[in-house]
Amino acid sequence: MTGDRQPADREQNVNVLLVIVGLLTLLVVGLGAAVVFIQLNSDPVPQTVAERDLNLWLRLADDNPDAVWAQVGLGQAHLAGQDMEAARAAFAAALAIDPASPEALFQMGLLVRAEDPNLAVDYLRRAVEAATGADKARPNLALGDLLMERGDWEAARLAYESSIANLPFLLPAHLGLARSLEALGDSDGALAAYLQASAFDPTDPEIKEAITRLGGTQPETTNP
Image (cartoon, rainbow, N blue to C red; front, side, top):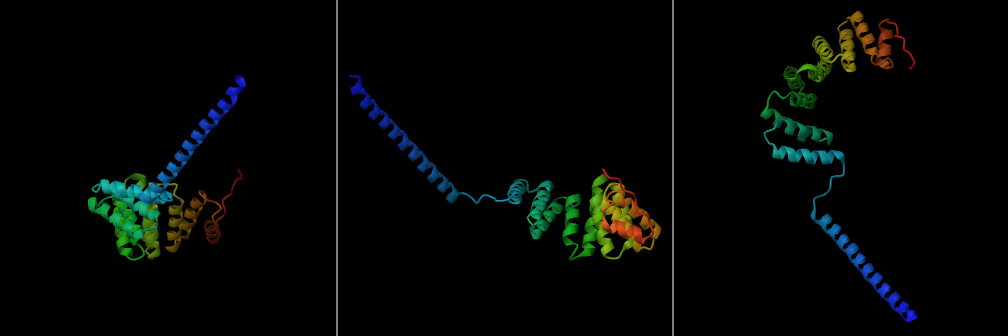
């Protein structure tokens, strides 16, 4: 009697397994169809961090049309995506809300410097006035660089000195100060500025060459 039950039990187990396999097959097919449906009916998924950030800031700017921070963030996201015209539009929108937004003024100064240096100088000077504390360092540095390009060495010197006063450990400001002093013919002041810059990067080729050119002694470096 036991022998008669075993084939029946095996047959029943096989039927149960077939049912389970069938259900799993239907589940897999259903999931595949759902994925295809989602792919066909959803917006393209951003492929990069920059694209995801841009989509986020587009939504934030749309939800907060009168918020300076949203427009500034959108402008920076466009910068990250190398869309300069869209970035300019976003920063202009921020300035329409708050004409004294330091970051928007700073970024606009950088964006227009190639096509309109005079306007860039105005933006950067306004950014310096609007910023506070160490936040003045970047616009002062950018202003010094632009003034150096224009040959206004004395004004550049003042901008670099202000940048150093705002943020003493900013190497490009020390280097800019040294260049402006050398351009003004102040060799001693330039050498002192190059030596100060070397304290931040003693291996910089330009700094080392300038110290030698101006008759200075290369500072000693210690191995870690």
